[in-house]
Image (cartoon, rainbow, N blue to C red):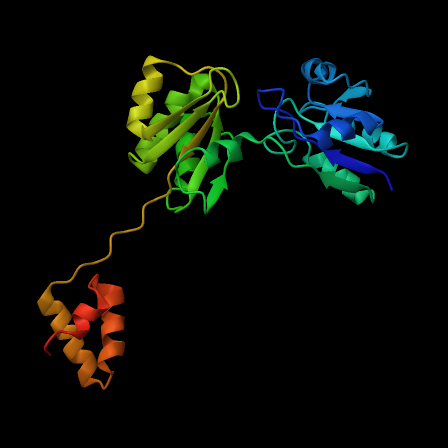
Length: 271
C-alpha cells in the first residue's frame, strides 16, 4: 500500500531538515506543496528533483483527485511553506480523503513554531492549548479570547506583525496584565524572545514593530490564592468537627484544605 507522508519543513533555517525527511522527499513520486515557488528554494538547496504540485487553501478540494491518483502510482509527500502541514496550514482535507480511500498516512516529526516557542518561553509547559490565529474583527477577537480566559494552561497563538499590538491590547483587556512571551523570527537571523507582562510587550512592539510572523504565548489564569482563616475560625471549625466525633488528625486535614493553615498547626491547637 502506498503512503501519504506528512513532512514538516524548516520555519526559517534550512538546516532544520531531518535525514528521514530528505530521503522521503527524494523517494516519493510527487510532492504536494503550499507554494511551489517557495518550496523550490528548499528542494533545490537539497537537490531534490521529485515533481511538485500546488496544494493550498484555494485549491485544496479540487486537487484531491489529482493527489489521490498519484498515490495509486507511489508514495506522496505533503509539505507546507514552513513548519508542520495541517497545523494552521492546509492538509486536513487531504489527510481525511487519503484515510477514507484506505491510504496509509505517516506523519514525520520536525519543525513547529508553537512547540519551539513554548520550549524556550519560560512559561509552564506541562499543559498548553494551541489556538492558531485569532479572529481579525475587534469585537469577535474579544469574544473569542473570553472563551479561554479561565484556562489555567499556557495559551499559544500565531499573529502577524501588523496586528500584534492590537491583539495584545485586546488580551490586556480580557486577561489582565499576565506574563506573556512573543517569539519573533524563530530560527532566523533576527530571532528574539520578548518576555514580560502583556503591557510591557505592548509598549515594546508599539515602539519597535516586529519583523515576520510572531508566536505569542500567554500564561494561564493564576490559581486563586488559598483562603486564610484567622485563629478563631480555625478553632471553631476544629471544635465542631471534634464534637461530631471526627478524629483530630482527620479534622485537621479537612480544615487545612479550606483554611490555608498547615495541618500540623491545626492539629496542635489547644481545643
